[in-house]
Amino acid sequence: MSNVLVVGGAGYIGSHACLALREAGHEVVVYDNLSTGHREAVLGGVLVDGDVRDVEKLKEALRNYRVAVVMHFAALISVADSVSNPIAYYEANVEGTLSLLSAMVDVGVEVMVFSSTAAVYGKPDYSPMCEDHPTRPLNAYGESKLAIERAFPHYERAYGLKISKLRYFNASGADSKGRLGEVHDPETHLIPRAFNAVLGGAPLEIFGEEYSTPDGTCLRDFVHVTDLADAHVRVLRHLQDGGESGVYNVGTGSAYSVREVIQMVERVTGQRVPTISSPRRIGDPSSLLAASDRIQNELGWMPIHSDLQEIVESAWRWHQTGWHGSATGDAG
Ligand code: UDP
Image (cartoon, rainbow, N blue to C red):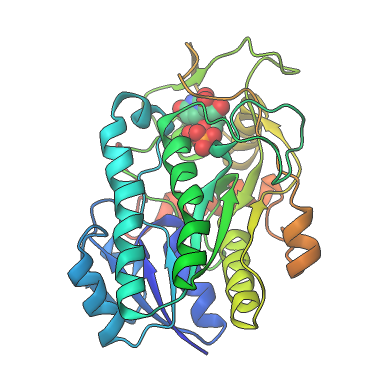
């Protein structure tokens, strides 16, 4: 088993990946500047407080902890934010990853598992989308992830690295034992925002109700964060067993509309979700649906927790308890 540096390991997906890595027997070192991550999400082990653009600090961490593999989750992730503030997205997501790669090359760490996104695809030509679907991002978030995906083959060839990319669809849900869950501030994601509306916060804005979808709202493929974490462990094992690097979609192949998600939130919470109609969010594709056959066939991954009801139930449990009694409060 290996020492794994989990960059962004105090964030939502990174922290769940740390749990899965530990359960698989790996030693985990979290590297995170806690700008959006949370100290409470680091459940044991080491936390190095550092910025992903600090090459010297990264090198020190790679050396000090004899790191064999890097998992890279640290990124800015809001589609809407990326449209209004692309500088921040290119700096954090592109420059940040390039710093990490430089540190790895200098120290001689050769394996990385990278968080990418379905946002690299843009408007679907067909659905569900496989990994070979054309990549035409609709927003700076997707562009920043695609830019770095495109740099990887050059680094792999020149420096002997192996880098696998996981293109996540809509990460959601929370750890089934209630140890971890989603805490963003401000919260932009649909399910926790629906909970905030149920709990007396502002009504949930529905961003666009006239898309060319069956009920007019966007369709998304919701994948449980614990299933995503398991995908990372499998990809890591594959690379360490001498497998080739690759790109994998991670989604379920089932799409739910924003309205269907709201209905599930109402069923699970037993309360009505107050909603208001809002304009479309710039940069939102009408539909994102994964064909995940590659990771299923090559690595035996299955979305075993990603039934929408289980996703919403686990997220709701977390939202009510969290680390502080109320996971996300008003803002988050
Ligand atoms: N959405 C919405 N109201 C909200 C948050 C999200 O209508 O308050 C919609 C959003 O437009 C998208 C879907 O819900 O169609 C999922 O958005 P989210 O931000 O959760 O994830 P994304 O698809 O951007 O990764």
